[in-house]
Length: 182
Ligand code: IMP
Ligand code: MG
Image 1 (tube, rainbow, N blue to C red):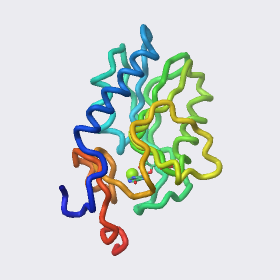
Image 2: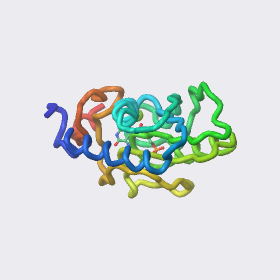
Image 3: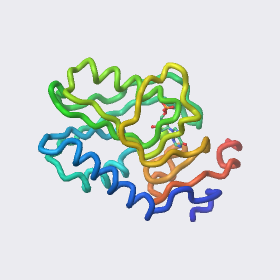
Image 4: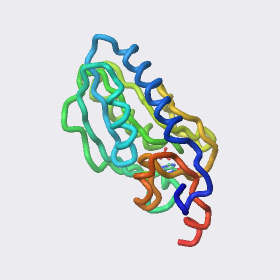
């Protein structure tokens, strides 16, 4: 385990099994159809790469950057749209792949934005969900959820603290002193 962590919350093995389970559901739900899988950079990259390789469908990849956080661990509530999709999603089945849903404000913004473009279906897949942290104003429902987790700041498997720890192959809880001393 990395020295900056208090504990490993979700192991590599648990993640691998969950990714297969989610991909099987997605494959079943969109059987015979094409699916545009949208990776929300950068936190979803690792989850996205594992998930798409388990989805047995004709897929198109696209990428977006939406910023909701400054450098710390609290949502500012300000969502900034940094990079848009490359392809049109009008008439397409779209799956948004997120790393974590916290306040829910980022995804509410994203979903509302994408809905106006006339997607045929618009579903949300998240590896992690912190339902306790949901803010009023977040109107999204999660279609595919990996793990519901307690209100702790987690890193690894794509998730960062100040851009570090994304490459850890598991999800862990950061020691509080790592982010309270900065
Ligand atoms: P929301 O708008 O508050 O739902 O923010 C979602 C985004 O905040 C995620 O895509 C992450 O980038 C970031 N985030 C929220 N909670 C955590 C956490 O525990 N660890 C790392 N990043 C987090
Ligand atoms: Mg982040």
